[in-house]
Length: 195
Image (cartoon, rainbow, N blue to C red):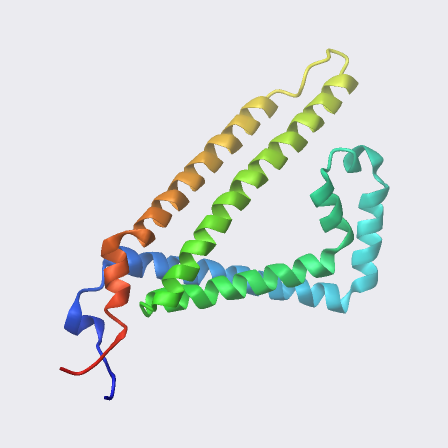
């Protein structure tokens, strides 16, 4: 038997939410992919300048002591990190286009992307807060009053609140894209045998 494609219009409707999320992620991942391409281009064209700047940063022992091991690895392997970012954002772009076209593999990939981004945002918050607290401790020890600069604590709290909001949105999207309603919408684009 020959399998015929069934378009979403024949078997169900396309939700506006999935379309808007797909377009939003297409735009964001396109910009991020272009940024990663530009980053890779700069690293390829000006390696001596980049290495000189990295060496200056690595010589700043007060700054280096604040960085956790993963950031030190990233500091010394910028070419690898640039390649990983380029591949990641290109993959997110491909998955986003697939979500717009209602492909099941893209929905699954998008769910994985959302899960990975949730973990990355939480890890980024904890590392950022750690660096911020270390910097605050250093600044307080150098200050004649022994206090951190005004606004530093509220800045760290605001960053934490922003991250909680981003994680909440990503979790909401994760649950939406795993829901039966959305799975059904994506399943309607599969090939069905003729009756």
